[in-house]
Image (tube, helix red, strand yellow):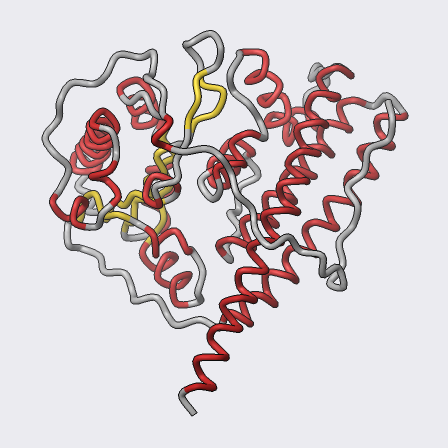
Length: 347
């Protein structure tokens, strides 16, 4: 197999693209193969007053209400107050999905990103690990759901530090009135640009070094170690993306969870690991499982063909990471210029 590498990045590289556009649109939605859910009561007036939900197809509104009902019923049974918000692509209005040729599976599909804010980290962890809740959501709601649970202190600290941008673009679906988020602080675009550049260079270059180890493992036909290194490359690229876009890096090593978070940032990321066939899903699961099984399971197997496919997807992720992260960094620079011009005019 020919050696494939991720070229390192440096602060001196200024050939940033002016932007990135895509041709996907929620308006081009194809009818899902699964039967539509029954009509639930309309979503809260608060959610509709914030804009985006009224533009969703009716069955998407029904699905969101169904998901909201399931989550709130589950938490109410445990006497857990919460603040439930829609974040990500459905809150911004740039969600996408496309059926595969079989008319059953989706080649790519945006998730409902639902953020549950609760009292403390122990409760948040319990919610994210509640298998019965995730199983019911998967069974009763056709659109995949990325359920994120965080404690109030964590969210407010991140907002105060200018992180967790998703909250700034959120839509409240349910509010028990028990929690109040702090107001976002004014941030310096130039400071964000510098932080984003530093984070991007660090994690992108780390991915480059790990790719060298991957190539060595391939030449030695040590496929178990190779797939583990490819997992680490993917995780580094996801770290770069997350920090550049949100100033926040999730602690998890689960590529399933990480990909859901990254996919919600920009629709093109949905194309990295297609899910249109069971074979595609199985290959991604191999990469996902490699973090543990490739190191500790002697019977863990991965073939050269599977690694070739996964490598092609990771190299595509690298390309998107470079393009979209640099475009985002450029946007911070543009905001900084606008801010400086405004401040100068006020003198």
